[in-house]
Length: 252
Ligand code: 13P
Image (cartoon, rainbow, N blue to C red; front, side, top):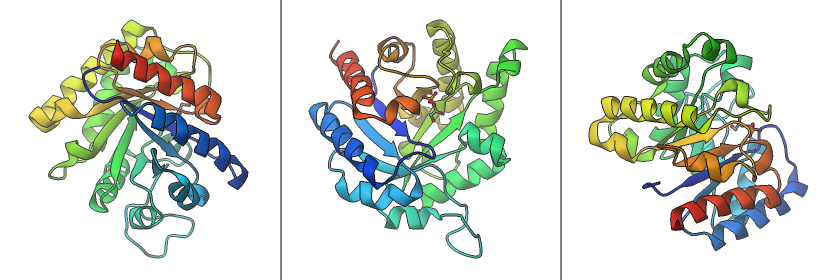
């Protein structure tokens, strides 16, 4: 991995103030591995407390609204995330795309909004199992990238892409290392087409059932520059092992 690895935990709708102890322990693990950039995205309710407690990890939101303020009950603006101490936002997670009907265009607008507020952004893409079975995985992901990557000036410098096959999320199933490498190479090519040379510096994370046991193998796949981790990011024990695997790769 030529790029500094980025390991991000997506806590999804998990965690209360009691769980901040795990975040503090993850923060200490990040301090032990400065070669790895570590982030955690908790629910909005925990962003401020986690950002205040964190020294060595970035704290981010799992989503943001496209508008800076207004009558949008239940939504959170990128500016509010930044004000709470977040430094990045995840946009276009497959759970938002599927359960909240988010389109590529909306995801792109969210990415632009986050960048506009000075946040880094992680744009998620990934095919369903039916799409992979139909041989459409790369075409689907290419379409998602074309529709949801931010186009603002300088966007690539604060962008990461997370490839998360929908069928691998929370299932314990992962694609083969070859399939991960092939998809990441295809994403790299699209990033080059979209951003020119700057596209080479965009980190491409793999996500979907990453755990302490499989992290090293997945992180070694072609063009994998980190991981977006769900379930295994909820405890310091398992997430720290993934951070350590990324650090080891960097040494090796
Ligand atoms: P799991 O690691 O629980 O499969 O979740 C992956 C994910 O959706 C991270 O955003």
